Image (cartoon, rainbow, N blue to C red; front, side, top):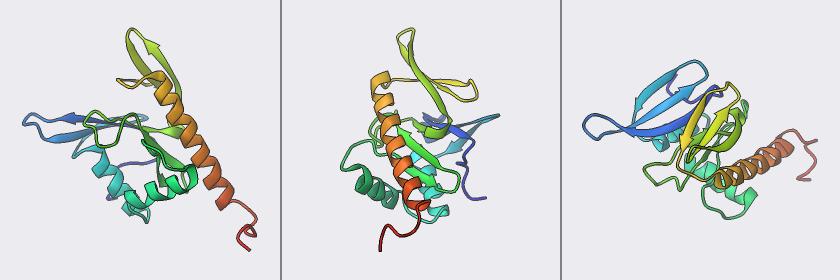
Length: 157
């Protein structure tokens, strides 16, 4: 399979290798994997695998949500896999979180911690408020996509 992002992926965390090369720590339900390239590269490859470019997914999300920054990206509609960025996607420290896998966000010892359905946790530099806003925005996108795809089919007549 050419993509590594699945519905079991919890988060994509950017990091750098021994020689400064961009890498992604891909956290899954039962494993962690270090892959070459920034998270955006992996998201782009996964979007293409599921039939669209990342840019196309972002344009569609902005059409639904209105213009905004830190737009969520729907990767796989069948599995309802939608990731949202913790900061502007161009920033080196941008972590991508699987909306469906996220359970809570809270401040913990000066850091903000995201907890997943599995009980696994990651720290992020983003504020708890910002992550909650991203979560709400992603919920709106998921709801609207579900309404459109599971409607009666007569909405566009």
